[in-house]
Image 1 (cartoon, rainbow, N blue to C red):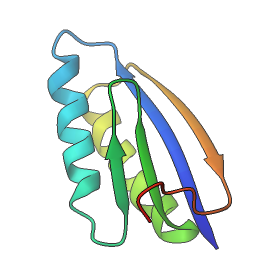
Image 2: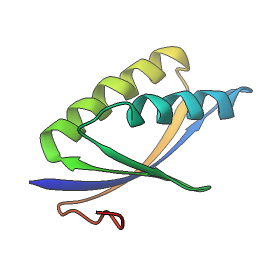
Image 3: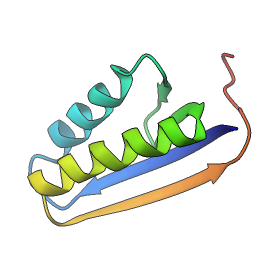
Length: 84
């Protein structure tokens, strides 16, 4: 099953832009995912289980880096990649 996710990460830290940038860059390094960014959110497309496993691992990593954060997510169980 394909999954489309739209996420917005808000680290409660002074260096929030760097933290967000590194998080998105790590997601984009996975060949199994398609990652699109804009000024308000990041859209991720891929296989459901793969996407969720990667997102879980990368969120844990960023949560360990900055314990206080807000994450807003939307998920839909189909491929809505506008470039796919």
